Amino acid sequence: MINDLHSRFSDIAGHMKRSAIRELLKLTQQPDIISFAGGLPSPESFPVKELEGIMVKVLQESGPQSLQYGTTEGDVRLRKLLIERYRKEGLDLSLENLVISTASQQGLDLISKIFLNPGDVVICGSPSYLGGISAFNSYGARLIGIPFDRDGMRTDELFSVLKELKENGKTPKFIYVIPDFQNPAGITATGARRKEILELAHEFDTLILEDSPYREIRFEGEPQPMMQALDDSWHVITLGTFSKIFVPGFRIGWVVAHKDIIDKFVMAKQTADLCTPVFLQKVAAEYLVSGHFEKNLRKIVDSYREKRDLMIDGFRKYMPEGVTWTEPEGGLFLFMELPSWMKAEKLLRKAIIHKVAFVAGNVFFSDNGGQNTIRINFSYASKEENIEGVQRLAEVIREEMEHHRG
Ligand SMILES: Cc1ncc(COP(=O)(O)O)c(C=O)c1O
View (cartoon, helix red, strand yellow):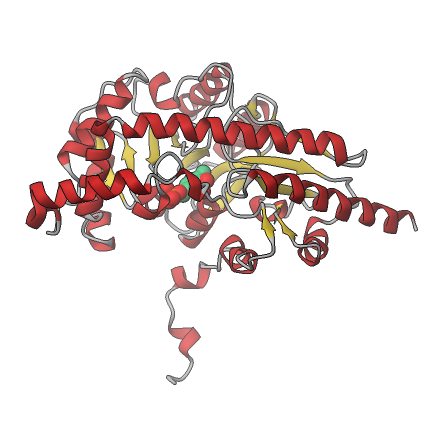
C-alpha cells in the first residue's frame, strides 16, 4: 500500500462523505425489513414488458448507431421530445437550451463544478435533498439553509440572509429550490412563493437551481408554475429526470438553462462521461412516442396516491399524540416531526430491531437541525408492507415515549 495515501487525495476528495442514505439502503435491503428509507420508485411501476419490445425495435432500426458513442449534448430526438413536453409548461426552448445529463445527480454535480469555488455560498432549503447538499459540499461551498412554512421556502428568512450577505459583499452562487413535493419535507411552493423567490433572485442578482424530479407525480390540487416558466431572464437553471416518472436505472435526466450555461455544462460533461448512454436515450425517446409513457405515469400517480392515503390513514389511527406529519399532494415522501426531545437517530436503531426503517431527518439539514424529524418514503414498499410498517413504527415511537416517561 502506498504511504500516506490520504494526504495525496485532492481537496475535493477531502470534502467528500459517503451518503448516509446509500449506506442505510444496504441495511434495509435485508428481506424482512420494511423500508421507508430510500427514495426508490416502486419496482411494480417499471414497464418491463413494454421495454422489451421497444428495445428490440431500437436495435432493429438503429442498431450500430444506438451502440455507438453519441454527442455530449444528447440524442436530438429525445431533446426535441422533452422540449415539446415543456411547451405545455409554457416554456419556449431551443435545442441549445437543453442538454441530456446522466440523471439529475450529474446535473447537481456538474452545475456545482461549473459554478462553485471553495467558500462560495449556496442557499438551500433547511431541510434539503442530501445528494444536492453533498454535491455542493464536495466543491467546498458554504451552505446556508432556509426554513419552510406550509407555502414553501420562507422568503422573509431568505431576504434577511441575502441582505446580510450583500452587506458583507457576498452574492450566493445560487439558491437551490425543490419546488414540487420537496425531498424530504413533501412541501410544494405556492405560485406566489415561487414568484417571491424569483423576485429576490432578481433583486440580489443570483441564480436559482430548480430541481424538480417529482413534478409530474401530483395526486391532487392544481400544478403550480415551474420557476423556469415564471422567469424571462434566464435566472433559473432547471434539472429534470426520468428516474421517478419512468425508470431510475436508465440514469437519464436533463438540464434547461441559458445557452452559455449549457455550453459550459457540455464541456464539464465531456470530462465526466463523454455522453449519456445512447441506446438508453433512444429507448427513452421511443418509449415517449409510443404512448406508454403517459399511460404508465398515470398508473404511477394512482398507485402512489393510494399508498400515501393508506399511510396517512395508518398514522391517524396508530400514531401517539405529539407526532405530526406533512400530507403531501404528490411525490414520494412525507416528513414526520417527533416530540422535540426524541432523537430520530436513536429511534432508527430501535426501529431496525423492529424491522422497519426510515431516514433520520437530521441528515437533510446543513446546520445539524431536525434531530427529531424523520423522512418516510411511501412509494417503494407494497401496500401491505406500508400498513404493517406504519404499525411497527407507531409501536417503536410509543415505546420510546413510555421509556421517556419512565
Ligand atoms: C430532489 C432530488 N434531486 C435529484 C435526485 C437524483 O435523481 P436522479 O439522479 O436519479 O435523477 C433526487 C433523487 O431522489 C432527488 O430527490
